Image (cartoon, rainbow, N blue to C red; front, side, top):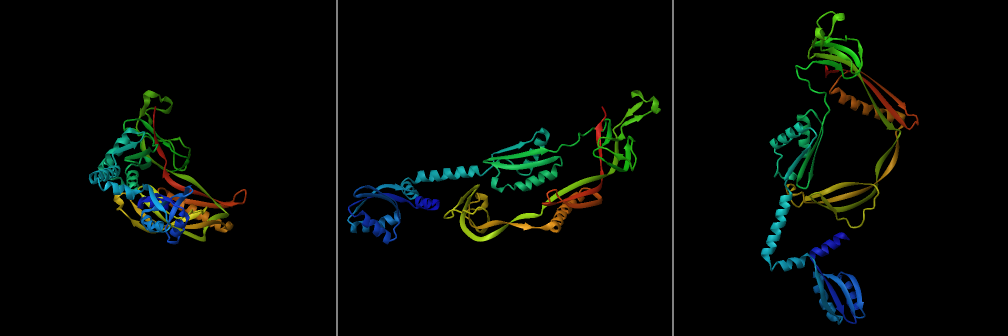
Length: 398
């Protein structure tokens, strides 16, 4: 319905008044000639009003003469008549078109760049790098590959925990969250090396300072592994005057355990097609989507598939395109996996996590277990992985 109204407005239509005793005869003749009239209303005994397209209006005049009726134009509506009026004012029309083109062109560029970050130093550094990479005021916003620049930021700045780029009108906003890292200590700052997590010492090499633990010893998070307090006298005589404070350095590798768990239900819901399909035309203009399907897509659950896509304007000029879209009605069905199949799926998920862990850690052992949950509705897969990693973390001596 919306599409028909839009088409009528673009092509133009007139609101007419039909005066005569045989107005109904004229309407019947118009229907026989396939002349579409709408919004038909009776104003009085011999007066009817209705709407008709410009093309059909001229076909209606001969029929009115035969039906002994007179037709009066009440109002002209639509883009057709607006253009007709503007043809006499060519310079005004040209100026209006140039103004619209200028507004559209200006809104297609980035005029403000904002980096949002609590760390002022990181904020300034990222802003400088973005400018160096070509992200600056005046850049065409539809040519910005946001994923590319986010990946580049994450690889360049190891202390970034999260980054996001979003475009709001003519503004580019970069949101950054800095990773919480242990405080950096200067070389001349006295410090200890402590355990960042629980584990069993595998290897300890004190490069500066004194080792307080040995291989095979169990340590807890926060325990001092290499101290920066070096006693210059006997242990019983040690006081502040007999202690040398140094910036501890060393390598402390330990056996550490990581636990992972996943839950896979015995009964899963999956989507399957019902066989019902509807097609529609979808008009994309920048971030706006106009669905031109005739009738309502009343599927509660459906998948969309683009069958064909035609770019009415190049992508760099706004992404104005027309797509043929297929709506496929779906329904949910229950799939019973069983304990064995659910266990295999849980194992696959755990192995995926193990692969990710192996990229950063040296894995020495792993153990997996599978069991039903308390309600016997799902399989719980658990995995304990033993890795060798550096657990040393510097802490300032105060």
